[in-house]
Length: 354
Image (tube, rainbow, N blue to C red; front, side, top):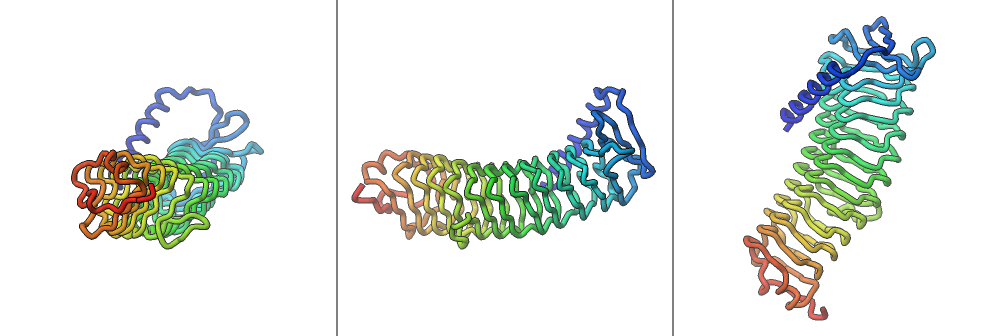
């Protein structure tokens, strides 16, 4: 996946840079400092637009030039500077453009407190081990910190969303706590974080994207504030869990699906080979194909709301304890796909009071 991600980012760099050379007009005033850093003046603010020394190991970006503040780094400005280790950013900086530092070996950086925007892939493929994101950032864009050896991530209190692949392939990351205002986790946001063992989710979370935590092979605890940290517990505010969201999370043991989820996506917990007990929330209507494929479930609770169970959704044994919250005549109305092991009426305990 790393090669594919790097290819995607490199292709994006070439495409957008090519567009800029073809369509960006002139007329802006520029300034070059003694480091060979080029700045462009617009609306009485400076943007760092390019650097001439591609072999430099360090840059110190000033707060102002002749009294005019430096407020932005342009898209791709340091991208693939293969010797760059450290950059000092000024307090005046508000905007770091798309892929600004992508695939530079930068291993340490302090983000200014006035920062308001972090672009797509801004630090993808760098060498960062720790990052503190300032409070002005409310959204982390796609690929922003993908493929970094991050061990510590401090997220801002005002963060609302985490973009697609934002922290994908951060293989040293062991735990993450999402702030209380976070509502959405994007597709593959933490996919293949192979050391991630604990995730603490906010009580406002509504959506978990496709493959959000897929391939997190050490993931053992997913909890919410006030919940039980010993098992998989999502906030009751969650309404959407994307396809393959927790696929190949081999250490998860117990799964509780929140009551507000209506559809469990394709292969959402596929190959979670330690999951033995599953409780499906009371509004779930559809369990998609392969949802719990490869999970050695011994205890399963199914709600009366259930209307459809997809092909190979469960890998049950003849000893599995299956409880259905409805009556036998309600069970007969559920559309059950093939290859669901021992999910048969004869093996189900019904709620006789239903």
